[in-house]
Length: 425
Ligand code: LLP
Image (cartoon, rainbow, N blue to C red; front, side, top):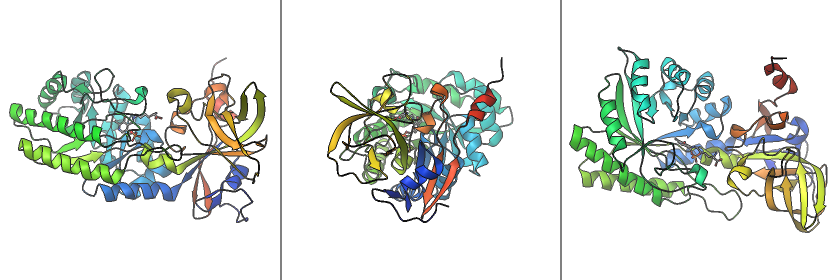
């Protein structure tokens, strides 16, 4: 537990723990997760979607504690590798509440999924059908869904749009590809098709694309009914629910989403004479993103031309998002009060390239100096889960805070860890 010292001036406390204290105790860079906030967000989903399955998308961030929290809060899990699957099951996650995704599942992924007994496997391509059926074996029967592409462009960046036909996931509804694959799935006695899946993309801030997705997937369900007499009991609308990274940015309203999707689904099914399928949703970012904070120590301040660079001890190896998607963050000074006026600065990382920018155009006190601590809010999703080993600096630890206590969930990657994998010479 963290020591019960009084917060120092300028301290921002999360989960009852001053962040500066976490930095002192665990070192920097460090990622802090507010357990109550993660749990609250799970509850918001459960309340908004009382009769749907809410699956947490593990790719946003997974460690055993997070798997445990989301399970306790009544969520299922979406995984996309044997690694995510094994870790979750090790944390006590019931495999039947897990869905396996992936556009290129390895034989190991499929074997692990079948061995552990995952609830559903989402078929992403025709190549997978016969391979999965063979892996299931003559006496088995695996529940599967099929990932379809509804032809909808949505999402915060081109790299994370998956609802259109010019990207690698799923099978197109418009050109009949999906329908053809479904006919082949129905021919496999080892596979039991429970429903359609579609994931439009990520960081979507409006409800509309989801409503269009409902209409197009229900349209396909109706054609499947006409063609095969098939009634699919499930519809998975994926995740992608957008959050605000800086004050004033829009976020998707989960309650409005749930209400309008439910209404659209009921109406579309009635219009097509179909029963309303059970809904599944797969939020990742919106569950953990706002609950995470990254803490960095300032190592250098430099003025060149028009720029003030504030360099910290982490960077693109723990947060590649600004470099990949041009995302803007709003870091703030913690650990001391500053009366200095705010200045426009560029917060950069420690890595060996000029693109290693953590926060372009950030506002920090003009007297920000080496030794200061910076907190980057909304750091819980797709930071550490996408962390790399660049420059061998070692991945940061993850610390949970709750009711005034801080506890280590994932330790810092050490030189011994790095050296241990290096077995040549
Ligand atoms: N379901 C499927 C099938 C997915 O592929 C994803 C995310 C999700 C659910 C969860 O989406 P979310 O609710 O977290 O938006 N690295 C990018 C995001 C990539 C998302 C990949 N798939 C980023 O940092 O913005």
